[in-house]
Image 1 (cartoon, rainbow, N blue to C red):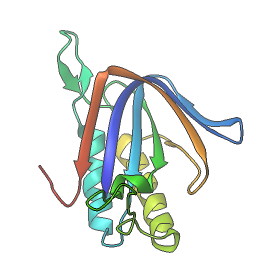
Image 2: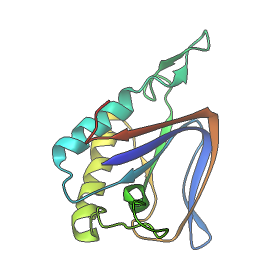
Image 3: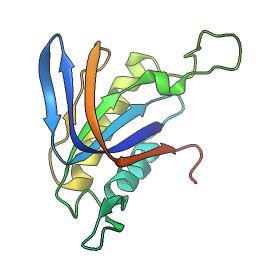
Image 4: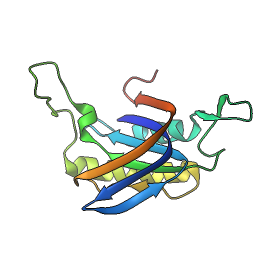
Length: 150
């Protein structure tokens, strides 16, 4: 799994001109799923996101997690995170999992992240044409790949 985690002052997801999720202070998480992803990847990634210390403390140092600041989270599926640009100019998405594999993993990831942070997580609509708006705070953007745990 790949995730792009953005600390936001606000974020929203719109589908067919209707806002389906919106938050103030928190995280916007774009997540890409590939065929080889497992429940182990989901557990590791959800725990890592919940514990990332990327929010400022009383001294302005990034030292607090989403749980500690009582922030909210939106998770949006994004198969394009698995784009391969090795050949030519048209990206290949061959590594991205097909919906029959990706949807259950995506739903499981949301469930595990909700357990980790102790509150409901906003979402996009899997496979829909979504408009994602955000005000990146910092900016702080972290990229995590469960296959390359650095």
